[in-house]
Image (cartoon, rainbow, N blue to C red; front, side):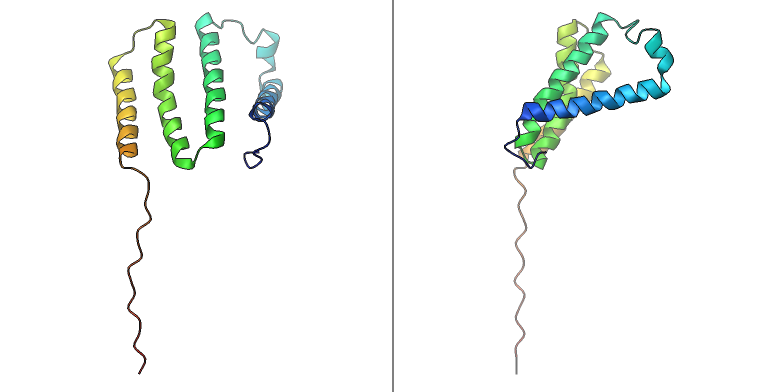
Amino acid sequence: MKRKAAMDINLQNCILYFFCGGFSMIYLLAFQMDDLHSGFFTGFSPQCIQVVILQMLTGLAVSRILKYVDAVTKTIVAALRGPGVIFFGAWIFHTALQISEVIATVVVCVACYLYLREGPLVKPKDEAVPAKVVK
């Protein structure tokens, strides 16, 4: 679907989420029927629902980015998505991050910066091959 530039990104997302939700429902019906009968969302806290909403919003944002960029940018955006969700989630939920979470996200951000600082990839020039002398 990415090759069809004229196809609306919202339609693409609808198709993607329809099939993801459909396959998830088939799995639940086949293997987790007891959970569906007892109430699937029983015990979900408001924070859990907020995490689901955050993941949906980041998924929609990333899908728009991924449709129009190259592979290198996609990789960087995918790498920065985790730290972004961690910091943004901590800010929204008013929770303190542990030192290990902060260190991990800083390492990822620094690695992305160092990678991007190198600039674009450049194809090495072919060395000139001496021509054979014909006698």
